Image (tube, rainbow, N blue to C red; front, top):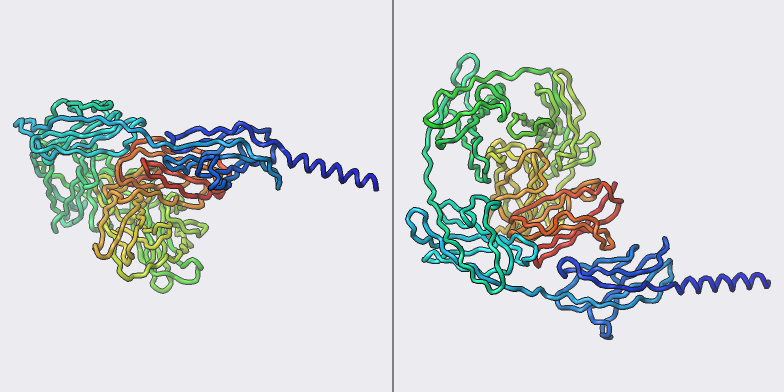
Length: 632
């Protein structure tokens, strides 16, 4: 009995001693990220089973009207608090925890996020016509901050008055300036054609700088010539019709409106003609209406890199195409498009897109074909296919489109699809799709979202998958672009949407913050896609209307995911990844100046453990944090 009492006494004393473990020592608070957040660090004799409770209140330590509250639990002796308001004094303390036992509090520290102290200066100057020396009124100045010290993180605009004079108040820092005017050739300050050559303008406090005079040259209309020819088959019959595309090889800057690319159609006799600019260097391409003949570049070349070029210094005639018939192959691909349960055959379409991993060039004549499924069974079949690797895409009204995977799991990302390898002989069966039903919106007070898809050359693209999601990431509509590149999403209720477009061997475009209101009518957005499918940042001429951070896609993900965000104006951006305890894991973008538009960046988490992570974007006074799940 005595031994039992002794053992109990030892146990009680040990528990009491363990419960009285030492509190964390030397808690400190240090400003981080330009005083936008605070980093707490402390000291403690940590064992493997010790955690730490972090407590906070938005008041000084001696303010007894507001209590401390626990804000997080961490396993390490540090924590970054991102949630701070300007001008508020915060107080913190930390406790060590093991099981149900807690230490007494650490010392209390205070931290106040102060408003930045801003200093300003001014730049002044004149803009003139280079030929007449007359002042240019209403010329536009786009002034871009280029350093991290400058808190102004947008492109600032200025305009000249009737005397060609401008005066712009700027925060202290370094800038580059672009000046433009209608019907004039714009330039960077001082007489620079590119931002890399621009002279940096340094603004100090209370400056009133008078800059050098800026003279803009009027735009000179180009001299135009005609390129003409005809399209025939190998037997000399002049009645092959089709579309002729001329790519301008000596122009490197091709904005989304298709500049640098000409289109023409043949007449009923196969003749074509179009006007081009003097000095253009052209690669001509024919896509015949009769699909039994090959598409090709002039003189039988198969890619734009091998194409024979035409240098325009006068009218060019006799640019004739002789087209060969396509070979006949004894092969095919067949399958069925089902609903997700595999019980209902769906009426829709299946696309096959030729995949070329070695030369992912948008002009390599990849073959894009489609067939309709049987309206009752959902069955489809292709025949006489050019041998090679294909990506298959199925779409049906009321269902989410999907690329083909042998495991039957739907995906709207062609890079996750399985290739279908087609030989010269043999037929492939059981190429089956299982489509999930989409969320159908209430069609009351609805409108449509439509437009055209095209490549960087301005050439329209058929078979591009576009899909619309709401603000929560729920896909509510999918559409495939037709041969003219046209797509449409109908019956969309009023609200903000996310539009995504992707195609095989192409990059992805993600546009967010698209506002639809039936009172404003339907909305048109044209989409430009870049080649290769590896683009990390994409933009579009359609500027977003709000600052936004989208839900990552896919989510959950393994091991990489795409993070998209929208900038309504050019901004300095920081994008970071944190674990659920608020500890920084990775910085994807650090104080980088990005143009207005929609952007996408890929996050590779192959070295991280399963779990929930946070991703946070900061831009000026804006910041958004969202969760994502890594599931290997």
